[in-house]
Length: 103
Image (cartoon, helix red, strand yellow):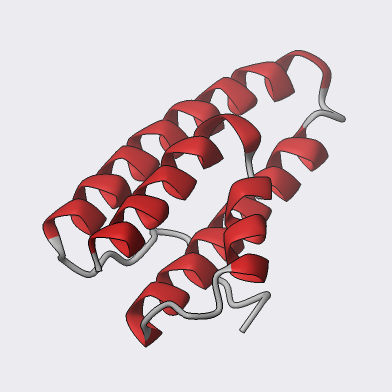
């Protein structure tokens, strides 16, 4: 269980920099997680994919896009830190943007 918490926490922290790639790797490789752990990985992956799509699409607006992307990065930073703390303490965490792209 502690190993699972560590991996879940690490994939959320790495998602701050590498977006959806760490949650995707964990989702594809860690099939022996508890149902709660699998659900958390899927929710993290969905959240990061949505933020990535927002960042890519907003880049088509020249100056305003840069400012919005900075805001998206700060939002992602805060949410990922909160999610990591929740995982380490054993509490469930619901991401603010919860669109089910992957189930």
